[in-house]
Structure formats: structure tokens, C-alpha cells
Image (cartoon, rainbow, N blue to C red):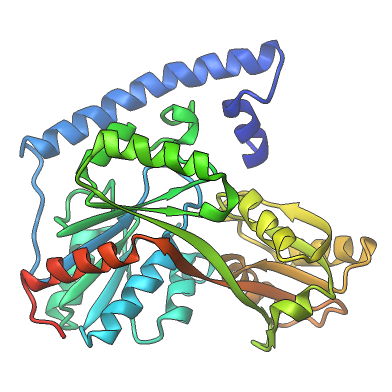
Length: 356
């Protein structure tokens, strides 16, 4: 099912008898999913399923909903923070269909953290052992690790997208929750992302719910701040220069509305857009179709996300297009709570490592 159609269905926007019936069947399926997840969490909590420790500090960056919540920018921020402390660090990621290494988040991490050793393996424990014993890593960052409990972690940080914080309050497949929100009691910290796209009242509501679940968690607010656009040849286009462009935007991410909203808020003239499913595998025909649509809309720049840039560069590289392709470079910027989060990270490291 198309991602946009699915979102409209589970959010209740889609009307009619057929939509109601589909939601009923999804709700039934969610009951089964809930029982499986509940049993698994119980077995880990009671020690029936074992967690394994490695000789390194393990940070987990995860989420509680499917879709793009902003994990990758936070992974990059944390890695760069650890690099400042000169700590040998590896990033553990399962990848998405790991054989397609070049079309997923790992490529974005590699590009932004050139000193990082990025380990792509769905078996996090094997990946961790290799990072520690073969490459001498002292710190591990487990990307998308909140639900992967087999590898013990020293600090659990969860990202929550302010625009859709709790996945319509329903478990998969009836909603977007990967597990009940009450499981946030396991989290040590939450970073609320895209805080600039909701009201202060909404942010307060999110924080109140989080504190009710876990009064001891550290809560930080953040935004995904655009830095510049970069062409396929890595030439920078300033944000001011972007405003003079007629932009056709496309993306295949978990929260496409957030990306399109960011472009509009920059003051750019967005003449058209195309949304694909999350983790979409672009072909040369897709790229040609995007270019054709951009031309029909009179665009003079085609703009996408950095994640999509990793997935499209191989389809673009051998072809010359009249309208140039570029991606919007962003970085995480904290509005509040960064000092508390840094202190929590420092305390966690101090248990096993002497840092600067």
C-alpha cells in the first residue's frame, strides 16, 4: 500500500465503508502484534531472554514509532561529540535491506562522519564484537536500537517527532507505534525533534506525557536546521540563494511533510513536489520522470533530502540533466536540554572511560 494512502487510512482521514473495514482488520492485527511485543519485552525484562554486554560504552539512538523521527542527525551529532573527546567510536546500523548499502542511512552517516567506522549488520551483537575486538572501538553508537534489546546498552536515547509524536496512539499496523508508549520507561533521555513545526502548547503536552511515563528521563528540544543545499557535484548553494530558485522537491522518507514544510519555511518558491515511499529504491527511469515533472512545473532546481541523495546519486551520476539536482543539508540544533543531555553522556562515559 502506498505510504500516503496508508497514513490517511490509519489517521482516520480516509472515509467510507471500505476504509472503516480496513481499519477494523488492522486493529485486529495490532492485537496480535501487541501480544508478541509484550511477551518479548517481558522475557527480556525478567531475564528469560539474555542481553549481552561488550567491553565498550554502548549508546542507543532509537525511536518508538516507524518513519523518520530524526535519528540520523542525532547519531551524527553524538559521533562528532565523541570525536571531540578523541574516543575510538563505531556506529552500528542494521541498514535497510543491508545489501543495498548505498541507498540508506549508513551512507549519510559515512558522509557526515568520515572518521567513523560504520558497521552494517542486522546482527548487532556480532557487529559490536567485531568493532571492539577487531577495530578497538571504545564507544559504540547503536542506530535504531531501542527495540533491539539483545545488545545491552549504557544509555538509551529516543527521538520523538513533535509533528507526530505517538503514531496516532495505536500499535502497528493500526498505527505507527512499534511498541506501547509506556515502554518509554526504559529510556534515559528523549530528544523531541522538529519542535519548530508545532505550537508551544503541543510541545508542553508531549513533555507532560513523557514525564508521566518516566519522571526521571532527560528531555531535550531540537530542530532540524537547514545549513545549505549541495549540488550533485557537492557545490554549496546558500539558503539565501535558494530563495531565488523555483524548486521541485522530491523525497522518499518517513515524514515527507516535514521536509516539504522546511522548504516552504525557508521562503523558497516550491513549484511542485513528488513523494515516494520511505526507503524507496530509485531507478534511472524514476530520476528521468522527476526531471520531466520538474521541467513541466518550470523548476530551475530539483531538491531532495540528504538521505535521498544517497539513494539517487548512482542513478544520476552518468546522466546530464538540464535542471540540476541538489539536496538540503541539515543538522540538529538544540533549543533546550542540550546541557543536560551532554552531562548525561559524560556521566555514562565516566563509568568506563576517563574522558577530557
